[in-house]
Image (cartoon, rainbow, N blue to C red; front, side, top):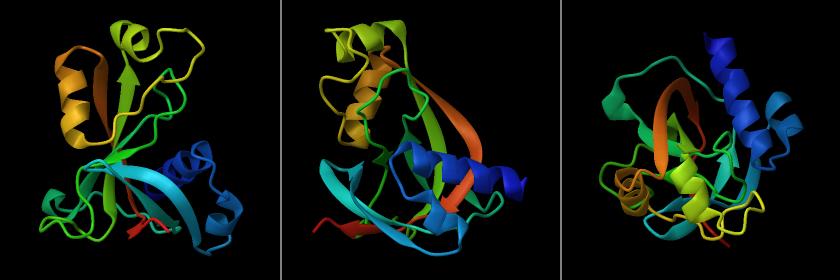
Length: 150
């Protein structure tokens, strides 16, 4: 299972344009302007650290869109540095998929890319309630801390 989680986290990072070779080699890579949290864009440090299912109070949710059906939507974190509940970048990945209604609303020109990004958990939940999104739990847990964008 650990190997599967590691592979999924690397695939997650590759799908977002990371230099995965650094992670595979055991290094760490800073990636700028990658994750939305509470309407603010954050940088992150890609690390090779993955782990098995921890106590859920010790991780935060990271909503990813790599298999969503549309490009251009960056991940959304449910917390960030400065939040009391932030766990230092220990993530439980939740995969988000656009429904047909969501594709019509977020990609009205039909070019395969979102016309606007969701930038917070609040916006994500609004669009979930509108029927634009479906969210699927994964068994992927990894560490990737958030840093203020430069």
